[in-house]
Amino acid sequence: MNYWLILIPLISAFIGWVTNWVAIKMLFHPRNPINILGIKVQGIFPKRQQQFAEKLGKLVSQELLSFEEIEAKITSPENLKKVLPTVETHIDHFLRVKLSDTMPMISMFIGDKTIEKLKAVFMEELELLFPKFMKDYSVTLKQQLDLEAIVTEKVKAFSSDKLEEILYQVMAREFRFVEIVGAVLGFLIGVVQVAITLLTQ
View 1 (tube, helix red, strand yellow):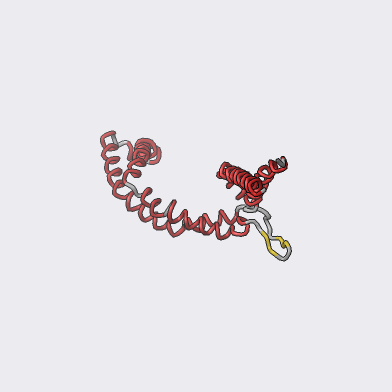
View 2 (cartoon, rainbow, N blue to C red):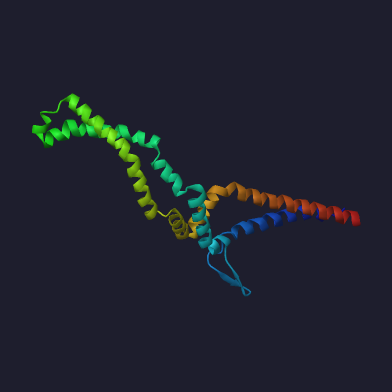
């Protein structure tokens, strides 16, 4: 038996690992286009960063965080009710402290019962006003806040180093798995080659 045949699976495994490692690196490198034998070569993400940013911006604005969802949250009665206790505290402080400091004569004629009645009236009006106010505000906000454009510009502004760092943080295990799969497949192919060689001798 030729013991050099044992090296074939190991060499094939190494080639499989290196091939996948190079493929992963070519997602990000070279950063800038270079000519190799007349062929322009550039990493996939640096080359497609603008298209990637546009697709991601569209995805975020339409599927992940639509403005309609934001509007529903800020105009939700349940969420508005969570704000009312804070508003009530400020109104109480205004009637008891600020009004007394600003207009002492008027505050002399306002007792606890009057303050409670005034506060109740204010809170009742605010409960009616808040949903309309937030609805109107959301219309203005929608005109000023273009989620798709914001995400697109942010991603386009990323440096290639930053983009690579983010993707490696998220997909480091997956990249390592791809490298290992390349080595395993290479090893299996090498074993098949050895078996074919032995059977045909």
